Image 1 (cartoon, rainbow, N blue to C red):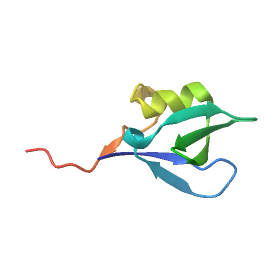
Image 2 (cartoon, rainbow, N blue to C red; image 1 turned 45 degrees about the vertical axis):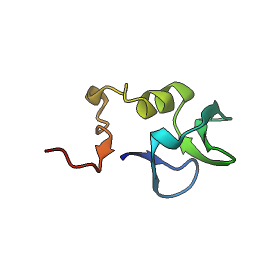
Image 3 (cartoon, one colour; image 1 turned 90 degrees about the vertical axis):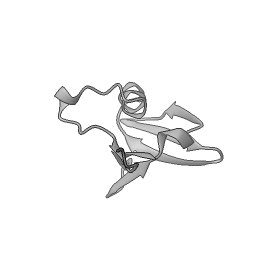
Length: 75
């Protein structure tokens, strides 16, 4: 399982998202983006393009962002 850590939109704390469970992503007002998991959703900080890049693993590590964490063991 891969989890991606993001900052909650307008709220304290971070959340971990499994990108395989995302059903769709929608831009929102201000500097936030909504991520949907079926009927459930969460708002995260960042533009639509930034969030999609992070969810798809296209965020370059030069920006200081850490790569997605994987919890699967590899031998």
